Image (cartoon, rainbow, N blue to C red; front, side):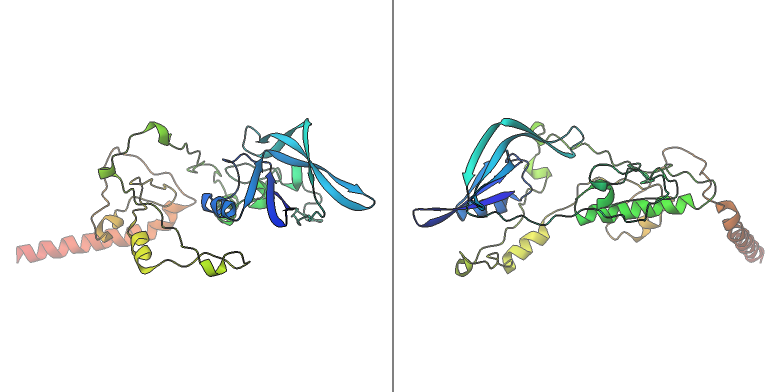
Length: 304
């Protein structure tokens, strides 16, 4: 985004030029509304082409029309119409500092392939690069994203590494590709009596901080806190992670609300994980002995 401060009849006005359309802007709806309340004018679909100067001083910025921001895979790849331009007067231009990936000599001699921006190419499911024992995740793989995405990829990368160092393990077996498809919310009917429609609570704004550089947002009131904690955040759908769940049924006995139940749908033979049969052999023998001892004890008591 390129904010441009202009003086008009003694009053300061801020005009914001950005590549994205209103629906693509990386800002929350309340942030946009707050900006509009502060007299910020939005000009969507424009990207910087060149900075205009005269006698060594900035006189303005030339913007070009941005026709699209993302490619078919929703990766940042803006396209422009070089012939559709506008010039905005400006006295100064501030350039923000960005980030780039500096690998140094870390990948020297390896087969890891780098793409645009220095990001490493890797399998989207296993995070394995062209160098079999090198796995990547986070911004150096996906590019700039939220921290939670980096945390999630770190978890998936750890699973891949654990499997890689164990002989005979598959990096893809039982993994979830997370290729989810959102519901078309405009094409479904949701009954209010069947769904919690309580809206998210919004913080109030302090009139004393209006027009300052301080955060105008206030904390929730006691009533807002109660309403926010009463909201239902459950979608009612549970997906079993076969990588973690072994079907022991312990969760059904621990749930105080009796919300979990197991139903036999088919019989299956579990796959071996590492050397699982060998590891549980000792416990199986001990368990068999205990069962035999208990059976014998009950038999003796019955005869007596």
